[in-house]
Amino acid sequence: MSEPLSFIGTWNALQALLVVTRNAEPITTRIQRERLLTAAISLNELALQTFKTAHGAYDELIMAVETKHEGESRHQTARRYIQEREHRPSSGLSQEAR
Image (tube, rainbow, N blue to C red; front, side):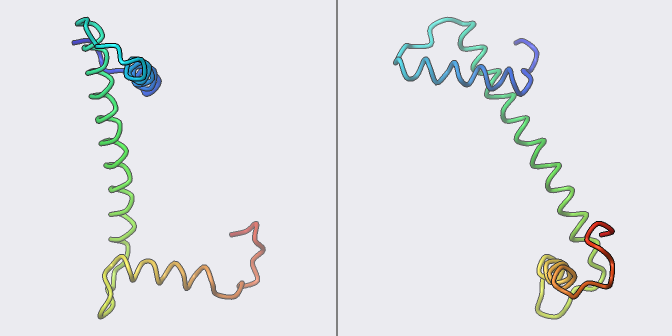
């Protein structure tokens, strides 16, 4: 199989799949099948990498909560801390200084 496609290459291959599907044309050539399979694999890899990046950032944020409060998950505690900080009165700093 060929090299994995970039995001744009994956997008273009998926657009081609939509055209083929819309026109009800069978995917008959080996090259068509290979391109579509490569596009699907690349899209899955892109989705997995995006998930791993977001999950890592979320874990980092949640683990910054040193004290989990009774009856709250770390997520709930982190959300409450952020909401309390965002909604408290200004400490004299201008909006630009924040």
